[in-house]
Image 1 (tube, rainbow, N blue to C red):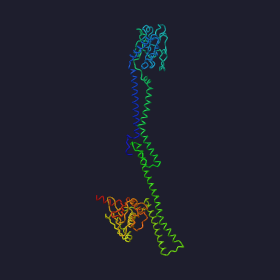
Image 2: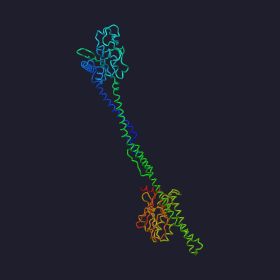
Image 3: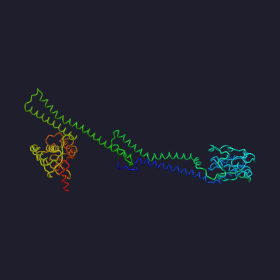
Image 4: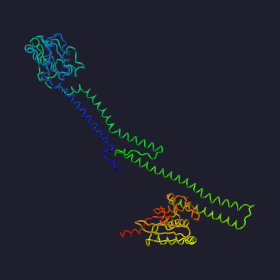
Length: 535
């Protein structure tokens, strides 16, 4: 299909639609991610480690002043559950709180202890403190902060546990002083009662992703469903609708409606398919119409042949039965007249059958047919000799004129003569005594015009479209003539012969009122060369 445009191609539309859909999904997902991470970043970086430590220390100081027996683990983790930073709260009375949401580093609680413990405690065994060994396990020495405590904080591990387990107070994690930590003191009644430790480094990215992945997954799934639905509506639905139209047209064509056509809109492969379908439907319609025409013609031909053959057969049968009756006495002149009628009807019947066979060969492309240059002068000469007896008998003037001298037309000389003889015979049959028949030829542009015109009654306008039909007769309009009509196949044979020569034949009425037949044939090679030379 010539009007197929690449950017309207179904494949390109699917590819571009898929790429555009992915781009939109990625853009939407990134936007949601940035919005969520922006909200998280406000929680991450809206407070620095120092500010978070001060906030926790202030809240713990105020809450312990108000309620000394408060559950610090539950209070602090509920109060600061939105924070993505880890923290540790260590009180002098032995209570300690670890962040639930983000696991604190293993060294963080030890650093807090080191900052909180007095130098006298550290001085007794500083290496043991650095190694994370509680005072009650170091041997002799003061039993101070953290005595008898080891393992999980009060209240157990955070919900879900910490990756890798809660860090034991062992020497793991290297030097506790290597961790960068911001501290804030918990002050109650003017005394340092505890300390809050918050790592200075921001939490890892997986912490936020672990918290955000349900939201991101829900948004991604929603965008995928919405994008798929949008792509189906914008890319596949119009194509599906036009394919359904082609399908409906195919079903209608299969049901016998050869006039159905599929819409040819869009400029893509579906349009090409619809165009091919419409071409097929058009050709099928032409063939169907041709078959219907042939069928009607066949039926009409059978009816016409039956009618035309019935008349001479009935006459022959009647006269033969009469001649064969023994009880009927016929004189010699009557018997001779009956036999002459039987002979004429037999000749007529033979003529009709011969014309039918000849017409069938011509229309079917069979029979002998040779092409050669036929001089118009010789063709007209044979026509005059052939019809001279009839013209003399009816006292008709037959005029032949070649308006273009030495005119040559390519074709089969026998068939061309047969066509012209049929036209002249038809004119002689319907031209009254004393009339005139004019046969002429001339070159007009790239064609040769052969014309036969008589001075008979002419052909009524309503009969002109049918004069070349088989067995069609207009004898009613030629009532002024007394010449019997022919078989009704002569003009059909003329049309078939002219069609075999690549020409056309027309029927009409001349200026004098008589019938006028024109045969138009293409020029011969010599005439075409002469015409080109004149130009």
